[in-house]
Image (cartoon, rainbow, N blue to C red; front, side, top):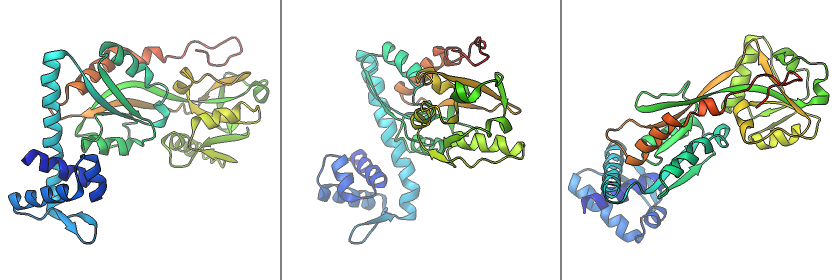
Length: 312
């Protein structure tokens, strides 16, 4: 009974709404409310601030919800371990992915699903690195693919996947006579469309420009790499995108992909999972796949093509 009460308490902390929490737990709202009141009575502390509706957790509730999440997660991990011993790996793996890795994630999830055909994988591809890390700490995600640099990763397990390099892509007509490597100043002479300010890929670009005493004010900004490539495909725009993103999303026809130099901008992409031991058998299996899948090698850039541009 205590476990069920903790489960309801975790759902309420996540949903921050009694009716939504009850729906997530497949119980009536009065049943959920009564279970949480019994939990407060058993622990002898108030957990929830109540008015006409949910008003948040009490200070005691904010402290104890971390233990509740851990207990619920450990309970689920124990059940997974037992099922695995009987029938092999099964269940559902929740994976959060930054947008820049939304295409390369297939290099990890495809071999993982091939090795474990009874496991379902639920991929969410609209998360920032900090959000993915927070949800892993709250046991709302099993794993994430993130940019670890600049994030607090002291309490999680990092498995490096690959290094991402920013490259310039534009119609060949805009790059007539250009060498295989451009300076940032030369790149900014082109009509530029870029990711929105604040997105990690854009921050990498802006940081590189600062080192050259340069700034950029693109006429077009978006939160979508697909939208950037679509505009490049009109032959009127240039953009700067992660080289690895072009592994599956092929550049539009008649475009060239060139290196940017002085500085060359790279960022580490890593799989992040909870450092809790022993943790979920599903996340342990995913980490093992990540260590053997060789994403770095699969995403490696080949030597320059005949026109001096980057080839795959």
